[in-house]
Length: 149
Image 1 (cartoon, rainbow, N blue to C red):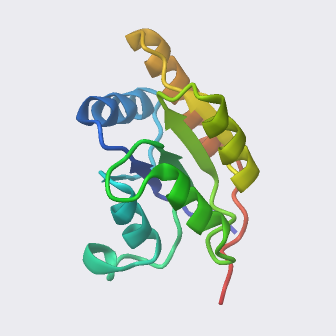
Image 2 (image 1 turned 90 degrees about the vertical axis):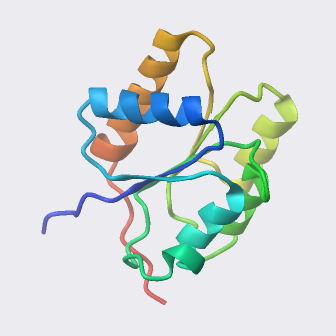
């Protein structure tokens, strides 16, 4: 049975980082649809199919690229809620952040993040990092089956 191509959820509030991330994924021929949310509350609404996302497909995203420093609900809280939810905890989550704080690194891994990537400041390094993430998580990685309630 063919595994469907799952959506990539990008939770990021910086418009430049959004545009660069999508451009990097597309330049590496990652065909997955990328859904962008600009704050942690919207990320949770997407995952729980609430508000503007109430009618979206029940299929969970194949990957969440999560910034930590976001308005409304920060990335750490989003991560904590997802990993505490039986139906969502298997979604691969890559923290893509500018934070080099050791406490953020330790806390995210403690909560069960799959990878922690510090956004490179140099344009080409940023593009290369996102290309590698997209290639691995969207193409190479085999996601777990969807948990049925």
